[in-house]
Image 1 (cartoon, rainbow, N blue to C red):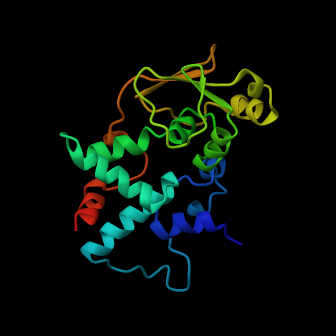
Image 2 (image 1 turned 60 degrees about the vertical axis):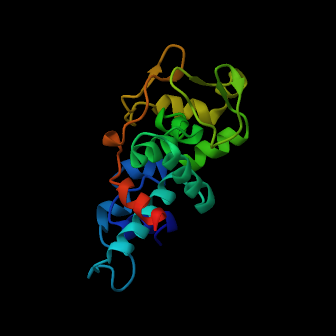
Length: 205
């Protein structure tokens, strides 16, 4: 039986990387079934402009694991900035602490990153942070707490580290086992095709 999260990927027609390690293996359902779930999945359907905007918004929320109210607030905050709203929107979402933990390979999925953060397994600039939505800034340093590093789950993750590509705006020091945000994320580097401009159009209606 297909996992509900895998069905979400099939519905979008692309990998959303919701299942962590499974998404990078041949066992990923998207490798075998690239069509949408359900009896009409292989036929496909055309969406209206509004439908495309709505689907794009829903896809982004699923990928990052963000609820509607908070996601809309990111848009409102981006809209108040002087630079392009779509680029700022993407930047705010990517700079979330849970996303950074996932991007650095300290967690196999964003869901797992949220759990780790809530249990205070990480330090930001040597201070405990247990808020997943915390905004990481350039030059911020992220590391696993000394007490947590010896836990089996982290030993396994660190042993397997290397299968996940780290974005150019992050750096990882293998000796220190810590990551640093070295630049502002650029939406040109995103791994999944999300049209942030269309999401902005949806919220601007």
